[in-house]
Image 1 (tube, rainbow, N blue to C red):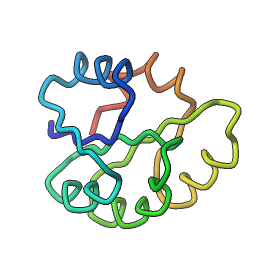
Image 2: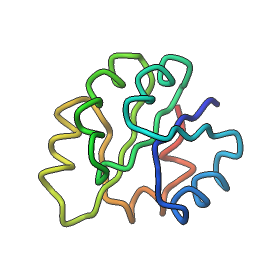
Image 3: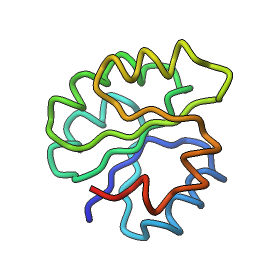
Image 4: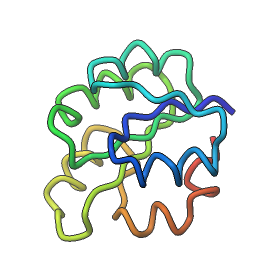
Length: 103
C-alpha cells in the first residue's frame, strides 16, 4: 500500500510511520497534489494551514484521502468531508490507524 502524508507533528508522524513504514511525508500541503497521483491513501492533518485549500485537488487525483482534526473543530471536519475527504477526530483516527489506512 502506498501512503503519502502531510503530518507535520512529530508524534503523529511517528505513530503513522509505525503503522505504515513506507509512508512518504511531504513538507507542505501543495506537494500533496502531485504526490497523491502515486498514492493509494493520502493522510492529512486538517488542522494545518493550507490543507483545506488543496484538498479538492488531492481528492481529484484519485487516492483515498483520510484526514484528522481536533474533535471540537466540527467546521473543519465538515469542510473536509464536503471536499471528499474521510474526515475524523484525531483520537478516532489514531485509535483505528490500521483500519483508517486500508485502501
